[in-house]
Image (cartoon, rainbow, N blue to C red):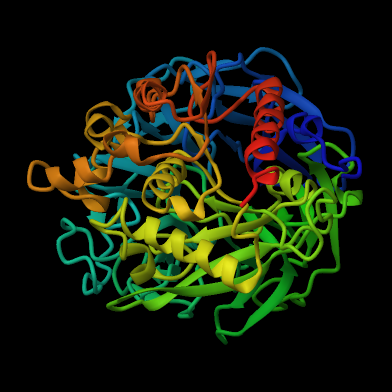
Length: 638
């Protein structure tokens, strides 16, 4: 084939940018950066100029495995508080100098500075919301929460008297059933939960606080309303309630998602205008993104921009966020939209979109990146969601010259992780890498995926390891029938929960799989239930079933138990320090396959966790995977 335009080095040498936040005066944008295995916070003028690194952490990053919630500005725009790599909270001047320790009550996350700059609210150990003064020798923090199993994202009322946050209890995950809670900031009084609807089909057994998922509490700038996302209407939409939580109702009721599942702190998929008359929000339309502007008084929505946005903040006449697309490498942008006042609201449309920072290295825009098309196929008929399964197809623009003419390209069936999640149409360097090498890529949104409404996501309850597999297999069959990919040259690929589905596809649908690629995938459900980290420790109760009643499902759906049915070549990549899916999971599967002579290539990356942090590892992964696929898929004969 012709020389590649997207190299492994390009994919590996960029940086991850996250959580852009406009300073309170709107003059600067701060954001978190992960690059070369190190984390830092960078500040750049909102007009765009040279970046200034104001914090730098050791290789153990200040961001947990799932989520952000790393920092917040002080009201004077001259300093910020941030979570260090040691899990403690620090205050750092933008002008430089050593950071000052604020909270040593580790581990902390999701700091939120009070409107007067005197205090900071934060989450301790993933479960307790506390408030500490921003003083030289602060007294012991005041705990606001009262016994929830998990908590996220505290937010202050404009008068500084109240704090709202997101919480839930096991065995529910936050997207199953959760609460928005409001409490007095001084710790007096009992927290009050917002009473959203609990009459949601498909989840009557989720514990109290449930029947609906909520997230991202915010107060209106004048304190008159409390906003949040809620799926009680069937889709994760914008809602509001009174400041104390009464009178909850949707602000915008539509069949599109306004945010994603709460895998961690720091998600900001909407923001209030400074005058409180509008909300800018992200709209997920079948995996494709659009930035909308809701006029609260009229209910009218205006399109601001195309692309997948997240990390939104709005100060004065500026909106900042991360913008991405299949052909748009991740970039931090500032939109000039006009601030307005209640007496003289500003026009809504953006007058400019300015890129102030970017993540990936240069060169991708000139590499012929591919925009996907929405596709769908039929799976089994299910109550509430029917038969339709959704996905997106990336068609290569560079057919492999070594294949016979007239044949469809080889196909990668890409299975997202979670399994509660979705690969939206963002910039995914790995997809670009394989499209550039002659592969079509089918992104599979099996039932259980987000982005298609609550019923679609909840359809996986008790069905993980079965429904995701049959939906993906139906997608691969549809790919062969519709010419999306060559029947003789298809391979599933996925990480974590996606790797689990890949392994089951290899075992149960060998006729569809020329080979498979598993990155730190689950192989033993019994072992995972006992060893995974606290956030997911109860996850299997909903997506597989409670033990011991569901023991047969755990056994039958564990890839290690049916490894003798895997005959296609398999590549397994694993991190030695993975705490979510421990290395022992991959070790056990590979040992079974090697014992029966199955072709399996296994590589462990020393010191890596649940995903790769070092550029050399990313580069090796891509080169290793391409060599494996070329050997066992591209050169495969009928």
